[in-house]
Image 1: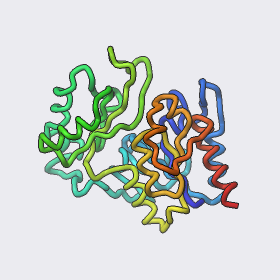
Image 2: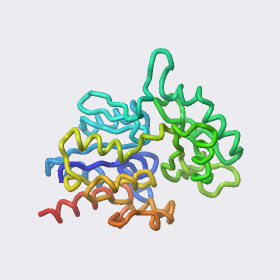
Image 3: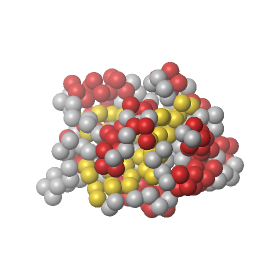
Length: 270
């Protein structure tokens, strides 16, 4: 194993986005030990997350990583160099940030108007983003993307990045709340991972990925082994049926699940 691609929230990070909190709120160092095991094996660790660039940068710096993927694969930072993976939709002095360009298109407003009470901005995390418009709610994702195409917003897609359950974020009448990102259609976590692999010269067999969402599952097509952490199924059991063949499911949750994936892979490669 030469590289671990790992999601942050709901994967490496436990409840309340804590690196040292495990299932049930208990203190746990297993996420840190997963990083230590990678370091001892000489394997690079790359965070791939839906968070904005500045947030992922700080997390990558804290774990000593020189590369990271942010906003669901919209951007890759490799040894200090930023590459946009948004098919030519890039920031400019005239048009502003990619976020501003998406806002100016009218697509976010159209979705909010179409799904009143079912979709809203995922505040405060939706503020000051570089690319994606971040929502929370519960909608028919296939229908929403069909509507985007019908409204001439086919250059965008709405992505399900997992279930959120904090009490302060609940929306009346919706028993399950998903985080949705509106991003350029060509961007994805799998594309970000593939771009990093190509730059480093890694083969699929060199790499594993660990995550907890539908968007993470898409990465299974470009790495040798993909692991879904156990807590992902506790939040959304339908992920089990949607997982591609070959996806492995950890018995442990959060950082302990990442540790399980790493040490199992290292042991099997001996």
